[in-house]
Length: 513
Ligand code: KIV
Ligand code: ZN
Image (cartoon, rainbow, N blue to C red; front, side, top):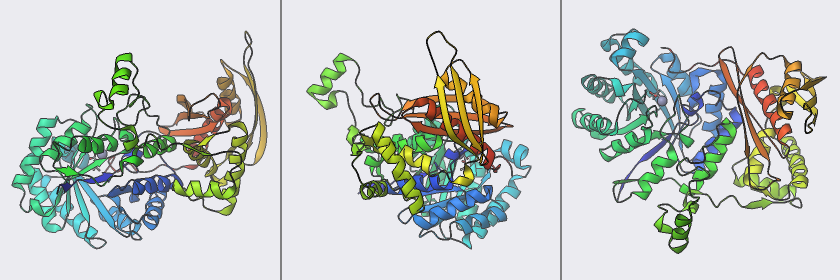
């Protein structure tokens, strides 16, 4: 029997720290349901003290998730821990994950605390957390640049205080696989009662080594890996869940562990996270990239046709690539629509929202005869924008684009319920449309990114557009989908403007004490 490798997914917390990747409560619940369907052991649902919105999302996830442990991050202070404890209260299985920095540079320059004070605070934090749950994880932030003797000291203290998982983060992605494995090995050998806790790693990808470092740690005794879907996360991101899980499974000859993950749910999870965060997946991304199982060269194609394993070490269907089949068409009824949504883990908040979504599904089915799961996901993303979120709403748009002529756009918006119209010209129809919208919204934001992807194949596919806007240091991503890419672009731009308009600033857990 192999030992279990605990998969701790932090897409909803560290992943959400990627610029502009913030998700609404409904989106987070959809992602959490998909993680549960994939049989993730622990879902880090957020940082409860960051904002009332984060607290609500964790609470909502704790109410609906039954098969995975739901966790909230908390700095090692009483307020954060009490907020985390309250947020996970409805969970069938809840964890508090508390952390404090342990590297000389973080203790001196960021915390302005002595090592003794840091140990004392960490021990107090475990005490507060124990009032809510016995499942307590402690992280030594920036462990990758901390002194090993100090790590042994603080881990010994928090284990005695009641921590049950000890996490060793390479917060700035500085470590190399051999060196990181040596640190983990020494910690497990030197910390008293090391065998009473689960050793965990949390690696960032600044040098592109997050997965390699995590796997090296597993080979010497780490039994929990913290990771994210598509490797999303602060700066260059975290170790990607799909790569960790498939490496452990594909090289079962090397790893003494196995995960409980249903790997066929990996691609649907990747697509969902990409869609709700607006972070496209690069085509050559391992496991979940569009080309991950595509063979371009004739020699490879020939080899695969003769014997798949000549060039493939994993089967596309094992990670969920074949799941996205034709699901519905224009003759499908409301019940078929509702039950397919349920199979995708989507529960709409009311009959009214379901009816509106069904009406949009019918409109889409008139334009596009074959509706796939991805089309439904995109449609629901549009539908779950509640009226309060929708300060700017597209009423009408028309573009005129002709060879040799300057493209023109005429757009009509409802701004706070009041209809306005504007015309503009631009370098192309999308540029003209954005200028017309800006003439009314006057947001003063800067466009950082514009990207279009076809959701499915065929020229009738919906275009999925991502727009990233920045204003006063805040960055938001907006998404929109439509068979007309100019309309998809307008929707994405308005979605980003609505996020800038409605969402308030939230605390970054690692930004301050
Ligand atoms: O990177 C990091 O150190 C973290 C901790 C809060 C675990 O995200
Ligand atoms: Zn992190």
